[in-house]
Image (cartoon, rainbow, N blue to C red; front, side):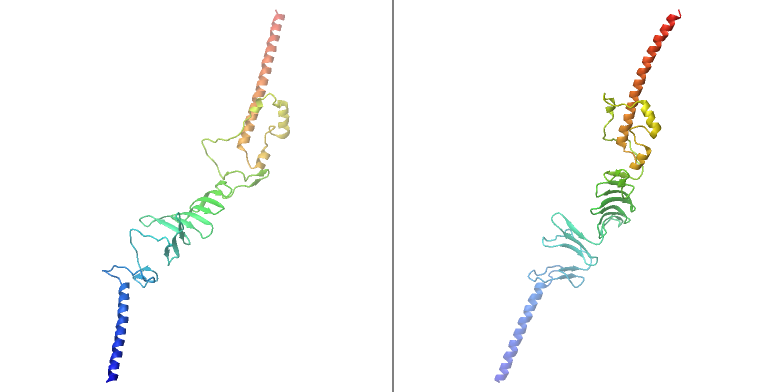
Length: 290
């Protein structure tokens, strides 16, 4: 009899313990369960809680499908958004910048799904804009150059020295007479403008009293000997220099024009003197023939 009572007491204790464990599990399960008609929350006291919609969750909130909402807020300790399938991330870099991590860039589309452009990088030093056909439009090679293109054909470039190059990718550096790298604009082709202003000096020094005007006889001798005007570059010299310095050659030509006027003034004075002498001689002849 005593054995039967002991067995009954043991069985009752075991059943009570089992009921306690079951009750604990039910309470815990209830605290983790969704409440309400398809909506609810997870108990914040459980740090490893995960929510999956449409699949078993791998992350805190894991959705198979689209998410729609008015606002998405990333906490100050959060990083950003990540596409697991494509390896693309959008991260908060600082209070001023976003960091977009991808192997290409950002495609920009209109509402009709037409691609209009791309903010692009080539995983090296190249960065810039592509057009809707994925052709370079603006290309920035870090610490090297910035170029402007149409259909991947470069039309203009600004290099690391600040030179603007149009119609080519490099500018001439040397000529037979000097360094050309100091020029800031190089155009491989024609230029058309309504007006060009050159900041240069002028040749009014020709009219100063101490100017040494070359006589016409010496000018003639120089031409006969060298085939060009004195103090003026020859055709061979201009070819060796790689062209004409527009500012200096304009001043040089003005110098020759002003020298020419000085010679004309001198000739005019001589002509007047000869005319006066001739008139005097004519008067004397008339008196003798009377």
